[in-house]
Image (cartoon, rainbow, N blue to C red; front, side, top):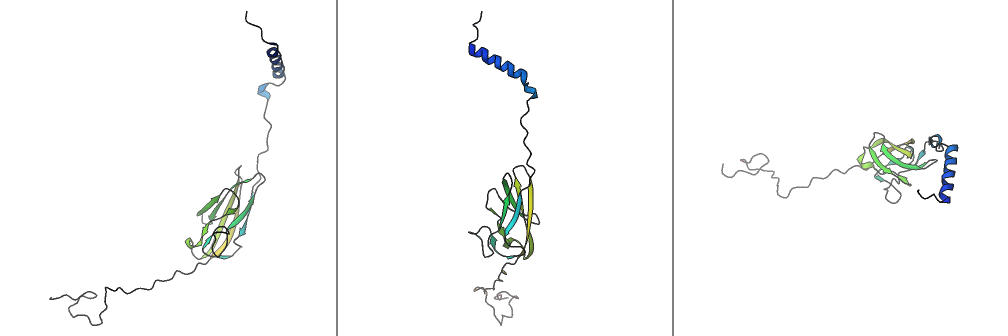
Length: 172
């Protein structure tokens, strides 16, 4: 005959049987949590609307004369990331923590009006878009001045047997 269970094991078995009869496992459901359907908020801080910008815009420490490029973003649960684009869809950069700064090199854009786009995402995938129109006006690229070639001499009186633009042929 096998040894009889200890009093503790008998009590535990009795309690588990009683609980199982009251709440069958199949009927148990985890508490329902409300799905996050709240979209984050995002708005441009800088550059100002319709500002004229040039050079490199990023954060206050590394920006050129046009200043930083930044948005503010918030969410009831938390902002997961902010993606920055030009309106034609060219990806600029992604930030995964505040401060939410875009990295814009205006020298890669044509002078004129451009629209920047920031998309803020929360962990549930909800997102919101904010756009900002700016005018790019970079300094004109200087036209290089031709430098005379010291090995090429311009002779106002070329040799009559010389080929046009070349040295004279000796002994034709």
